[in-house]
Length: 236
Image 1 (cartoon, rainbow, N blue to C red):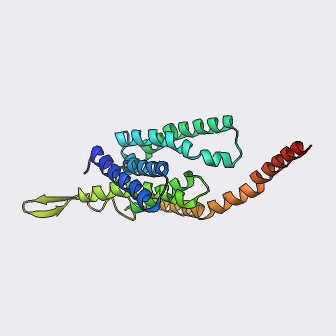
Image 2: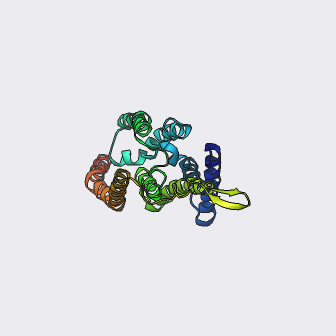
Image 3: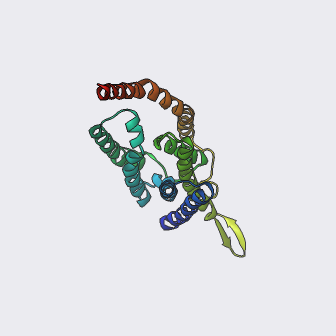
């Protein structure tokens, strides 16, 4: 099994390539490429958040708690929140991820469970898409792709390290196939994962349209009214 250092090194290399390729071939802005590459790098730890109190869980929760609120700033502005409200919402999200989600993962997950699966990689990408707010859907997909790529890099390494050379021939360890799987041998993890996948897929398909309608109905009219008042005062 690949260790923490191997996973983070491999996902970081892939993140550098992911960001560089987007900038060179598609002229994606450098800050966006750096963010997507960083997400790919850190996502190489995500499958191991089921390792109880291990280093991947601590590092992943600390990173997610810090980055998720910052990635949601655009969404907070879309909801018309004040600066003070944004700070309070960011602090609440930080505490919730760092302590509530971290505790749940530590107490109720099993290593090499459904966090080590292909559906979990899709779920992580969909969650990243929803968090990475903004008007440009393609950029959001690009950032989410970095998360999926980093996640898959971890699963791939786990499978490769399940193959060993023993007495002149290749041999598969008992752990082979436990990372890049579609389902578990237990029914509850399968149901839970499928439910999350269905809900997040629905939200990903609908959310851009919802936010556009919300902006047109709730945010844009007050802005127009404010602009009209300013124009009237200038004219007078």
